[in-house]
Length: 182
Image 1 (tube, rainbow, N blue to C red):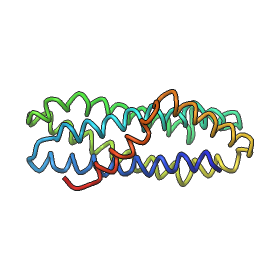
Image 2: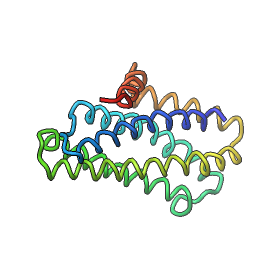
Image 3: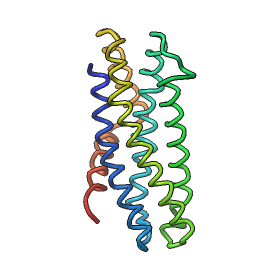
Image 4: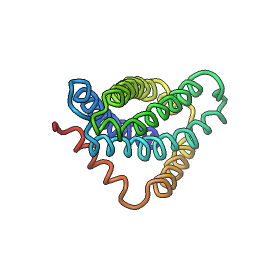
């Protein structure tokens, strides 16, 4: 299905950012400061591309459609995914709050940034695995070709409204820059 393939492709970009974020955290705990520019780009991608765009496609479109097909919102796979989205948002907020002092060399802020970065990376890698291998195959079994078309159209609206012109390409470029060694 085109809709779930779109979401899987977005996961690949998010995974590239996670690799970069893990590298930033590793540098920080090895005694180097948190690189404000690189960390700021990673956080912007995670807030805007991963959450406001990708998670919005899932939460406001795919998950709601799956609920209409009988999947429970408050328990089971959808509840787990929604809970993990919220947990991830908390880690991103904590990294954002710690970044100014961490990039200035404050050891406590560096520790907080690195701890939340590592927790977020672990959470999202596991989350992506569950969506790619469990949730999306379930959606592909329950959704019709017409529902898939509707999702793709709705995804385009979210992309346009949440990301804006050129943002998607900019975030892809930044993701690949983050994956490059320092």
